[in-house]
Image (spheres, rainbow, N blue to C red):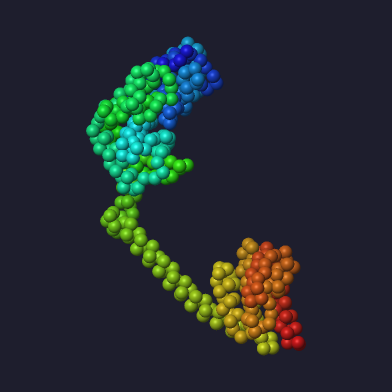
Length: 401
Ligand SMILES: [Zn+2]
């Protein structure tokens, strides 16, 4: 047997009584139902059977409609059913809105709708065109809303294939008998198994949210009815908050954000310049504490709470002094080492730092002039001390040449 589809007889019915005709764990099939089973791009209805929540509705190949519900009931029992009406009405608004938008795209661009998805947040249709301009999309949205304001009645009728008004149909049916046609009076005829509003005035508004190219088609996303109102309310609240934060009227918000971005870029540039000045002064101070060894000098020390960038800048700046070798340790996990050497020292810091770190299971290296690496924090001070020893040895070896 098949379940009698009460949602086709009256898509506004939201309560009913049905008899259990089959059961499976957590699922009941009824002789009749107002619950719409997932299909044709429209999600399943939710609701209650004997006040127990129904969390899914599906139709099987025999035409039996199954309700997922934790309810102990036996074949022959009568149950009281009620659908989540707000959810269903939302689906009716989105689905009927889709019919209007699809017909408008046919009329304006000869674009057929080849895909439809009614999502939790947005609805999408796929059009068999490669692209539409922003002006095209605005025109489609504007015409769709004009049609909605006309409040045309929407009816559905069952016809046999011989009686199909094929010429007038927006697309051909996928079934061969008992074909259900949804008619928006004088505007659109389309085979469809979904649930629809009784007239277009019940949708009120449709907003296209975006377009994207998908596998050779153009996908439009939109919201209709109450969803469109909620979307407007959300965006209005956001813009009102932005406008208050920027102390600008809503129409100036975008320009004001651009101004803030420009200001930020300018301040970042200025901040970088000032930081460099501070670091240059700091390098001059640090140079005073370098240790002399023959004609050369070396400076080895830990810098706490400094960034790697700062340490590298300081090291390279110090290495510009006459005959200077420099190494910094940055405590942390890992412990980082940064080293630099002036060309006039004749010492290559890359290999020295690599060797010092290798002794303590650290890694690093670099060029003769600049190097860096890292080691476990517990070994950091030892590795830095090792590098200092190696600096001294290298300078002494150079002196005795
Ligand atoms: Zn439909």
